[in-house]
Amino acid sequence: MDSPLTPMSTVTDDSFPSVPGMVEEIYRDFCGRRSAVVRALTADVDEFCGLCDPEKDSLCLYGYPNGSWEVAPPEDELPPDLPEPTLGINFSRDGTLRRDWLTLVAIHSDSWLLSVAFFLGSSLNANERKHLFSLITDHPTVLEAMSDHENGRDDEAGVVIDGSKPVHIAKKGDDPPTKNIRPVAVDEEHSETLCGICGGRYNSDEFRIGCDSCERWFHAKCVRISPAKAEQIMHYKCPECSSSKKSWQ
Image 1: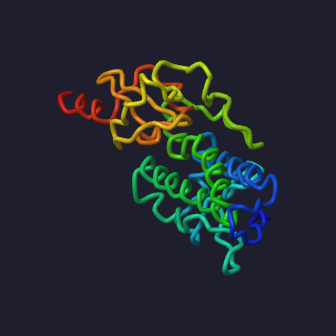
Image 2: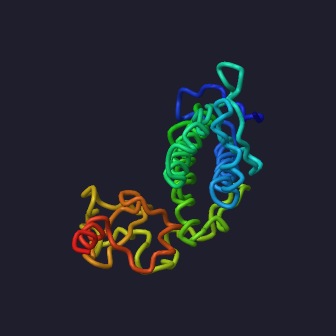
Image 3: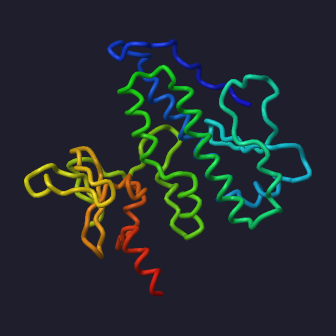
């Protein structure tokens, strides 16, 4: 469908550097594809739904590095140049609720985006892979972006295709954008604070978020809250407190 990046030659020793700039190039590729898929499932959702005709052959949702998207049959050539998106998304369009169908497409799209990034970075060393996926996980998932759009909390303006990080991401040493999420300073006050989900300690470069109800702290990743998403939360309730509230309503 498009011209993928060429995976690097195999590097078997992490002490040997790979191609300079490869991480940034793969990240830009991810940002473009992600932006395209998010737009297909949000701003262009009516057009996307119309193209997913169940009477047609198996179709896939493709996002391209330039930010464009396409509903098309899979590649004929086997094996394909890149991992393929989920096949046959059009068949279940009319057999379930639209919201449920779009949710399933979003989840599969998230999996596809990660598989493409991992494929393109297959020869990155451990530190480079960590850096790449740290950049990637700063973004909300496609499913989260779709849900935010539906609820009028569209943060895609902060996500750009050129590979820059969203402007709302807090960094170590920055003033916290809200009282709920902040980079952890490993000092005497917080050195013994444990995550309310995994029970682990905090590293100096990790984000954490505090529950306004029970006042416990959590690794942001453990409660699936990205720094960008946390900025929009005025009063955060952890999963346990949220469940307790629902149980008596």
